[in-house]
Image (tube, rainbow, N blue to C red; front, side, top):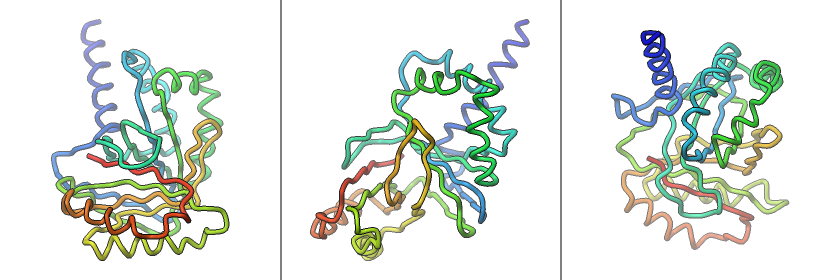
Length: 234
């Protein structure tokens, strides 16, 4: 019996490590996404004293997700916030083989784990989810020694051509930053709405570079922006 308990604990530890892997042995993580795959972003704030529920969640929900093609991808802890009222504790990534498998999971999981959504509400006080179908092959490298910032923009209605957004990206490049990934036109399941027009992760050589960029970008026409949610990653 003791051996079985140790085996279960080891399996859980490995699972948690892969799902919440923020740092690997290498300081550079490579994320490869192929056309037609689906990329998840999850913004999570975990409740305290929910380790038993978390263990049960991993043991019941993740086998179903993995069977339906889910693959965890290294994500980030959230260090602090610069703008917006959403303050997650972590940014988690994942991918699926296709939009069909991703959306079929939403139906299948409640058949196999009827209280799936109730479990999530007990474990996390905030659970924002958006997924994006990849339109072309992508490969990005995350250097953990660099300074990373995630920014989500909600644009004013009628401003979807995003003149501001294009100017903002140009400003990042001119100040020495790099846009690692930019996402738009995603979907959120019922109950997990997180729906910015653009979600972007940019990297900077240092905090000082990012601060200089912030000063410059504050001079742009911010009246075209309905809302911004921005946080520093680690």
